[in-house]
Length: 185
Ligand SMILES: [Zn+2]
Ligand SMILES: [Zn+2]
Image 1 (cartoon, helix red, strand yellow):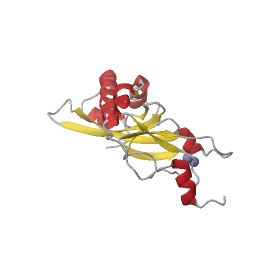
Image 2 (image 1 turned 45 degrees about the vertical axis):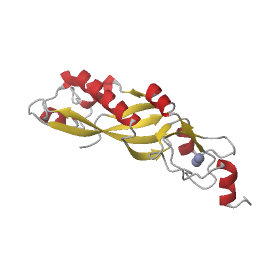
Image 3 (image 1 turned 90 degrees about the horizontal axis):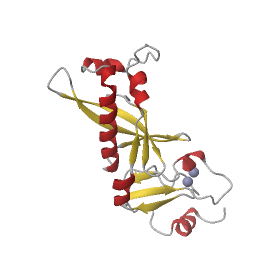
Image 4 (image 1 turned 90 degrees about the vertical axis):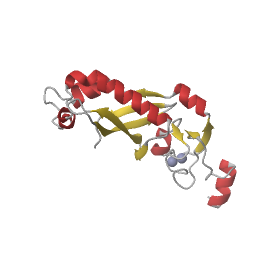
């Protein structure tokens, strides 16, 4: 490339890329032969203006961040929170996964019987927090950009609130998909 990186940036993005915006949509543009998998996997994904994967991802990254109306986020964002992530995965009733992640929930008075309640609660709170930009960016690789979201629930055996981290993957068009219902305390 003969262009300096600055000239390249100016021509490509047309404006100051450090501008923060309310919400943005990551757009991967097919302008060169080499498509890097990290950029491709976040194509079409929505992020809060101050919580998006580092942009540009690398020199000569062709991706752009497009402004996204916050109303669209509020109206269309959704969370995919599969029941199987709780039963059987989290509570592991047949001791198949042997990850021990259910121990914390059991100490709070929850059992596999509460899977539906927990699923609904994790889905509701996480979607709300995603829309509020209340999430942390995690690993970004060719399998996607992960985010973590803290969920609070009451203890069933004590008058107290406890919280834990849930792990999600950001998918295109405002969808977040639950990877792990318990990613740590
Ligand atoms: Zn890239
Ligand atoms: Zn890129």
